[in-house]
Amino acid sequence: MRHHEVLVIGGGNAGISLAARLLRDGLTDVAIVAPQPVHRYKPLLNYVGGGQATMADLERPMSDVVPDGCTWIRDSVVAVDPAGMTVRTRGGAELHCSTLVLCPGLVEDWDATPGLLQAYADGWAASTYVPGSTPQVWPRLTSLRGGSVLFTVPPEPASCGPTALKPLLMACDHWRRAGVLRDLDVRLLLPAATATGVPEADEVLDRAFADYGIEVLRESRMESVEWDVHAVTVESPTGRRVLEDVAFAHAVPHYRAPGWIADGGLAADPTPGLVDVDPYTLRSRHSESIWAIGDAADLATRPSGGGLRKQVDILSANLDAARKEKPLRRYDGYTVMPITVSRRRLMLDEVDREGRASPSVPFLDPFIPRRWTWFFDRYVLPQVYWRRILRGKV
Image 1 (tube, helix red, strand yellow):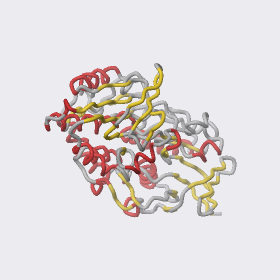
Image 2 (cartoon, one colour):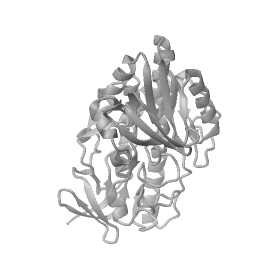
Image 3 (tube, one colour):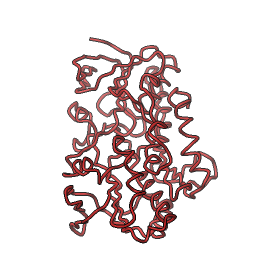
Image 4 (cartoon, helix red, strand yellow):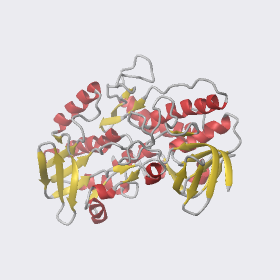
């Protein structure tokens, strides 16, 4: 049985940046379990869906981003034993560790929406949340000249669900410039009463929805899809409604945590299966040697890349504090939900766990859409990500 001082499950933003930070902090035995050969900067997927980026802009070989000095175990996890601090992989390996960090992300729950996967295969549904379908989104959106088009925001848990509004609002701006917006019936499904749950941000977005003539179906979600006739059944508190003859649907699937989290007794609720942690210290409520960050951790805040930067900083400090039996630092739930309201204007929407404004730049209102924040989100942050965040320098 192989042993590692720190074992990190997940090779996304959380896993790679945390491993790099720990190595910079002086740890020498850090391993990552991640099966994927390609690492993606996921925020750019929405810009691919908005016609402003390509997949080549956001993909790198995993071997290029795993930090020097880190052991990469190219395999997937199938079981965790918290009592024995062991992990079993699909390839049959048994891994033992002193400290275990869970950041595996979420997986698509296609069974939650019968027919949706077939609609993806048929080509009339796609989304920026499913990388294999992302390159289809913008060509399909820009080819529309009339008919019905549907956009959805995924219900929780999801990876920064409100950013699914980016392709919608960029597409509406394009359709207006192309002179076809009035010929399209654009509908949006929101899983809650508002888009973000932050009044200042929702006010801005509601104005944008009204300006573009978007029909917003609130507290609604896809129940099922009749893929062969392009129909979507929508469930809401007022009952069911069937949307027929949908020309194209930017339909984001529902998500859940990997099943081995709940199977290992590490989740409070087996349905979403998120890791049950203290949302302030990031430590598991079930084991003092297990920690979690990212989309699969129940941190009582919306997951985001900006939130991860804070979480990595807190967790790296807390792992050191735990070894030295010192007080732990606390995560305030900071997150950021960058949403474009047009092709080149973006609202940062930075808040803490309570929904209060928490701007990275002091005295800057994060709810005002600006051109420079769009430029920063599209062009500057990706470079910061590849050159600093994944190297543990932020």
